[in-house]
Image (cartoon, rainbow, N blue to C red):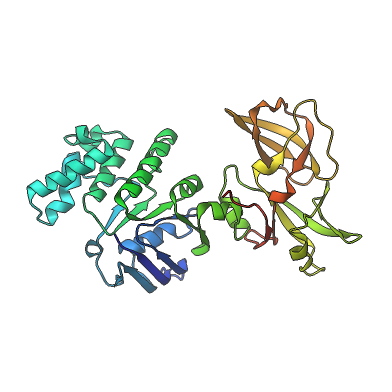
Length: 379
């Protein structure tokens, strides 16, 4: 395996469209890196540039310390797993997995050993004689994984490999890919638009939007300490709630005025927020769904200081937990993630308590930078 180094990589298409803007990242040997972001953010383009399938406009890419800018894809010693599986329909699973090795003129005995060993790791030994049309989506993806494994590449590249699978199988294959990564000690770059995949798989997660890297850090660091409002809203299920409001100073005490309630700014955030120009009191408070505390049925007395009156308009049971959809006079869609045994009903107006030790404050705007954050990751 080997490290991967991207330095000031740009990709500009004809007409001036910037797909990737100044991408710089060092991927350590045996590290699992996930590129995540909405459609069109440049993550797949970045992966294809690493693979050599997309030409770089400027910058450099090195694999194992070797500059790859002018190296053909077949000579980069990488293996790529695609969303569409890309299996040859006229070949058996065995032949698909062995094909790249045959092109290298490896001895048949060596090829057989490599294919059989990979098939055992993936649990598909009994499928080696079958053709792709005889396999389920999950089985085809395992064959595609096996085709990559037998090559013993310096780096594995995954381009949304689980997008065509159903929800249950996606979870199973996600665990399988992580298990294989740990077992093989592989350097892996994985592209997905699914933030849940990103958080569960990556040693580090690279969050992209409009061709720009907004944050690169460990998954828990990104979740608890997002760099800006876009990152905060993109990672998390359900996503973070955002309350627009303004700072109010009353007799030396700072409050966040949401429009229907004034919440005391916690002492850890007050010094930073006081540094903002007084002429610009507008800001955004972010609250994770699990940091909203709902009263149980029959216990609707409002704790005065930290609660906001909200109307409950939808319940979504999820087994032991449920998502509760609420609204205030100014904010129509607030989601709380709570214990399913609350006994609450649609239409009730609730005093919803906000855990102010777990909130985030951002500058206004879709990607407003983080001003203060105190949602500490667990040890």
